[in-house]
Image (tube, rainbow, N blue to C red):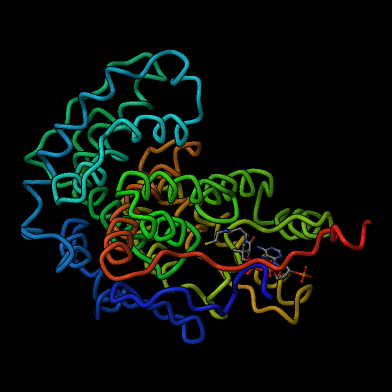
Length: 360
Ligand code: COA
């Protein structure tokens, strides 16, 4: 029995292949490198939805219309909801989007994390949410709704690269949660809500905010090694390092590091911030190699995610919401695949509690 189900195969999928030994990610036959070279999030959604929904291409205009449709739900955000952390407020609003298994329902669920996150961030600051512009790309409109101004082409490309990079990743914890719920035929909205709930934990999608906390605490390139050593000695995990499947560097880390360097070269990231991050990364890798020699621990997707989302103007408490904006496409495709082809997921447990006959 493996309590983390490591190495247990629980699904067959045509959606993505995570090659942990060689550090490669393939999405429907396309390598991550090819995918990030110029794809918009809409292109990857078409790829993921192909064969699972009728009329899924082209879908940019349909996704724009879905953003406009779900915007109305922000009117129901009351004071109690606005006091919740963004990911929990977003989850509460998502539950109101309605259920259905057709493309329109799926696109409302894809649109909702972006529209709700942008609207909630503004409402929390006492500002009115900005209505979606269906003519813009999903990434451009999301940035516009968050910041209130038209993003640069480079900012749009950076968010697109992020959303594309995280769109799907095998049977990670949140995708597995989506498939378990889909296997009961509970519907797409329930699957996405379950997935989002799994995503928000710090061992999964909740890591990038704490990566920034770690950079702040590490202070400077000079003080970083000692701070990291102290954190590890206290039994803390270094956020943005390690992975259940990758035994080498997470290929998504480099895809995002490229975007971060691009933003830095245009002045969108303070060079001192990037230098600190690179110093912390180098010191952490060195430390993990020395202190955990039996376990290959390398940089994961969350490390450069943190810098990228910070540079794009997202507050750190909303980073998990932005992860959900991208991963929701994968959740929906997996939920559809499971509901159409899979069986009810119902594993067994081993009872290790007291036996009635022994107790007697
Ligand atoms: N920092 C320090 N030690 C780490 C570590 C990290 N980031 N990741 C794993 N380890 C250590 C564990 O403490 C454990 O050591 P031990 O055997 O001496 O107790 C060993 O490596 C194996 O850890 P394990 O819990 O089996 O790894 P896992 O496969 O279950 O965990 C993660 C994978 C991602 C949960 C884990 O690497 C982690 O917590 N990373 C930090 C959070 C993070 O970045 N999450 C985003 C993932 S994309």
